[in-house]
Amino acid sequence: MKKIALILLVLLPAFAKADFKTLSTEQVRDKIKQGLVIIDVRRQDEYEQYGVIPNAHKLTFFDKNGKYNIERWLRDLSKIVPNKDTPFVLVCAHASRTKIIGRFLDKKTAYQNIFELDGGINRGWIDKGLATTKIAANQGKPWYKIW
Picture 1: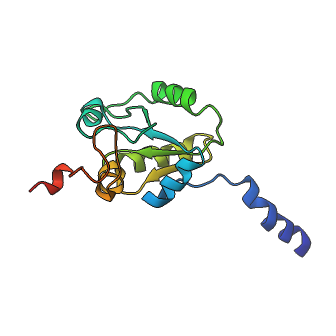
Picture 2: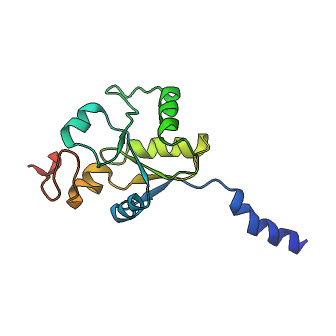
Picture 3: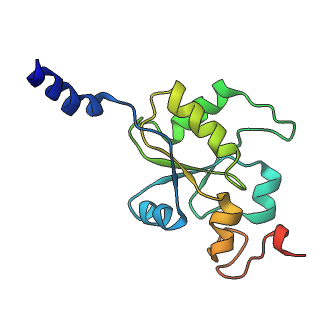
């Protein structure tokens, strides 16, 4: 009986679904070098204001009224991340929307390697002096630091 319990303890993690995880800026940068897919879930007006992380895929989730179309969004995501084992990071403004989306994907889909950028693009990227398609490295000052 002890042998069976030990085998189950060893094998069970192999069948368990990976948890949605928050990554630091440094962890995201390291994973980008390894081919991490970046999914930016912000709206078009936010892309225009701050730009996006270079090579990020723009895939808006919530509209200005907080509405979404999960079937369409998942279909579009599957075109960008067709393999459920491919690691990808979700990015929004401050990592609020990515928490909602990431937890949903973790609990309700077969995606295995779901991450979010801690602090979002504002606090986790631009504040760290990193470039976007609109802001050069060490040149951006987010709106909440202007005054």
